[in-house]
Length: 347
Ligand SMILES: Nc1ncnc2c1ncn2[C@@H]1O[C@H](COP(=O)(O)OP(=O)(O)OP(=O)(O)O)[C@@H](O)[C@H]1O
Ligand SMILES: [Mg+2]
Image 1 (cartoon, rainbow, N blue to C red):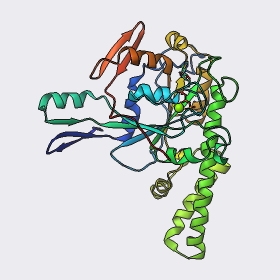
Image 2: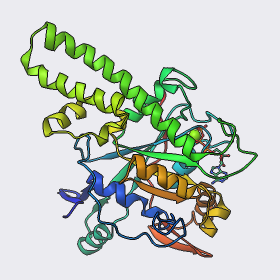
Image 3: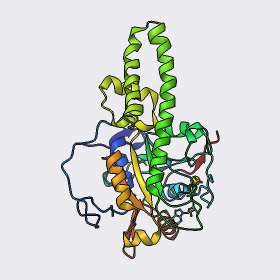
Image 4: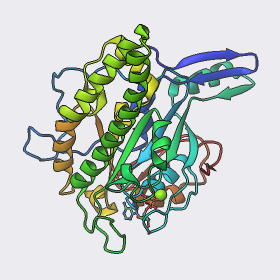
């Protein structure tokens, strides 16, 4: 299936994105997976292809731009990752809650078909497909009730189509961890629980609104919406699952897309390693993280990387213009054109 849609405008070529494709593709930025597979008892080997059930339908509104929010505990490397990915210079200092207002930038998605078409037709202007990236303030336990920076972050996440969930797997005594020690599995649990709890709250409000209209007002058209919300409650509260793992009819999906629930969004897990661990392709948390993701979010992508190393490399190779590949010892970096400058949205 041709996923990149080509638009010919009077002034030249314009590319727009298919979200599912872009989600998978953008992270070509990083080196290939170094995760140990389950079957080989945790030893490092190329992942074997398993015949498993495919993921369910992607929830979310159809559109021509894709926005990914970077989510995680404070001080885990979200802004560092954002800066590297989008060649921005958002503050990324060593203290929790360094980021308060979200930073936004866009990054051109590398595509050889786009390069070929530009080269071949030489149009007066070429507009690549962009991924929009939002660096969001760190979340802590109880954030849904206003702990840490409170609830403001939630509207930032709900405005995104997908989530980059960053977890810290690097040890560094000088970098404060809000939970006191490094334990990415616990951290994954904290963040996913917060998102689920917040969805529970939004659901309550939505149900109260619907109840007024559907039951008291007697508007029969609204009944299916209420039925869908009851199903959402079962998934969230009884099954304790994220909304995207429920079984939804096309009617349900329409209702879900109206409410922009946080746990309906697809997640890519980014494991931030130390430079040393990334180079030697080893870290004691990787297999535990994979186990957690496999049990909670079976089709999700996990990408180990080192924000520190990427940042160093970004500085080193900043001079180069177009998309390019560089080798640094045993590491290959894919670098591509960044976007149109950083914006910070004040609340
Ligand atoms: N892989 C790594 N190895 C060592 N240090 C790192 C790594 N990644 C990030 N850091 C350091 O961790 C500190 C916090 O990084 P950063 O500001 O990006 O975190 P953050 O998640 O955006 O925090 P906040 O939520 O407070 O905004 C910085 O000093 C950064 O240099
Ligand atoms: Mg930050």
